[in-house]
Amino acid sequence: MGILGGLRAAGRLAGKLGSRMRRDQSGATAIEFAMVVGPFLALVFAIMEISLVYFVEFSIDNGVHKAARLIQTGQVQKGNLSPNAFKHIVCADIPAFIGCESNVIVDVRASNTFAEAAANLPHPLTPSGSLSGNFSKFVPGGPAQVVVVSLYYDWPLMAKLPGLGDFTGKIGLSLGNMPDGSRLISATTIFRTETYQ
Image (spheres, helix red, strand yellow):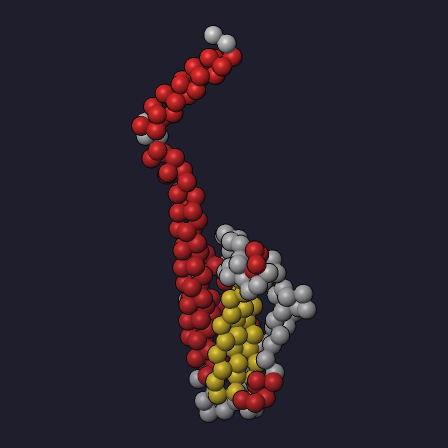
């Protein structure tokens, strides 16, 4: 039996093992599960993250509108509320896990006309794109004035998912809209205060 005979014997043995392995599928389910579990869990966490972001946006928007009603009716002005007291009112309707009192920026500005209010809107971002901490004002105004109430919250995302722009150089699709990958959530309402006494 020469080299050629040995190669034939090895080929037959490999053929027998190959046919036996093709018929044996005992580990196929485990391999398929291992291939699917990663993308499935990523999808589940992405859905949870998106749901949480929308819940936080809705809660913040609701809190701003409820608190702004107190300015519109003159209760804040008559009560001579401080900025911290007004922030406490805004945060009363926002879930506690957000850490509203310490993590949000509330800005209240009064103007005489809607055009003036539009021209005096706050600029919450620095030139680098991050949230600035020193733009906030608290001027609730008086009767029949136009007031803009804004709230800004830099939400740290749990999962930093890659955006489409990371691969293509085009527009990104990730939830983050800040340079550090977090999401700036804001809520703004504009109204004319009532002619309270």
